[in-house]
Length: 446
Image (cartoon, rainbow, N blue to C red):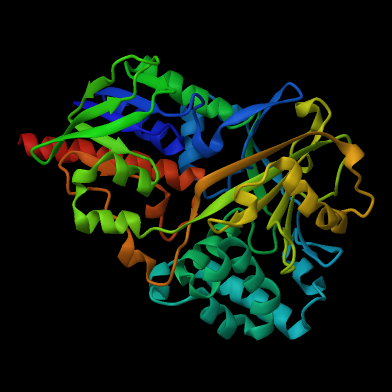
């Protein structure tokens, strides 16, 4: 079978790897010159680091298995996380369940209700029982109005903005249920998070190399002009010219598997039909944005610091060097300041210096001594399709993996449900859809 996979994020890499392992002729094409999508890396202080922060949970067995298969298993390290919450100018630690009892911004009764509701979600594996519910309504009933307004509500608003009251309960369930899975030894145990020594870029490189070792071809920097559809069937893709003034290149295919954002697929394949295109066009995304600073000293002692104040312009401060050694980055202390934003929000247009101007007063809430002289380098990274808005009854609006065009498949982060976007579930989906395409092809031949 001849297959073309569009998009070399981790989902596309996993799909192409699966197809190549099965002996199919595979071309993996990527518009960017850099592979990895949201897991792409660059160099800081002689070490590699992701544009967008990444770690694994203990439940991320697909990624862990692939890392082992690629011969990198000995370099996957599990580390106790240091998590906290920023309220005003005070940092509260959340490394264990008992820390919740010390969270004084809410009453003792609310703290108990927050803890009991989280334990309940941890024990309930049947997420479908929550289908049709809104997270805001369930949280308010289980943890009380104060628990929602002071803890979970701000986090939902930070991630989804004005859409927070309408977010689906199964999505919230997955965040709690899977997070507890990274605490070996029960709810009182400390959380362990995984990281690949040398960055997840090593996994990306190893996957690309494995695809080529199995006879596949990896083509970075080759945008797709269109998906070729003949008589209702995908027959290949047309690439933009490799050189200015050159001719487009046609890659014939029996199967085309797109791992691009939904609006991109709608543009590449107008033959999809009105009903399917309506599902694609109906997806709303929040921008994912990250201001990344390389400092000459630590900002705090916390790895993952969540900000709950309504006026704070970032959702979380992730201090990578409280998780990994600063020596891996030439002695620099690396901090990500993450935000999710509606289209049109100023952060989607601003550069690193402009964003720093707005973030600086809030960075000082973390550490009042912070000064710009600490900054050695800074970067700004953005992803237009970073976070689909998982509204109430979202499941009913998900576009199927099988499109109306025979032989054309979609696997992207809008189809991850109830799980949130992440390496593990994106790669699992890529593998599953690749197998689906193979099985469908075999059925058609029979």
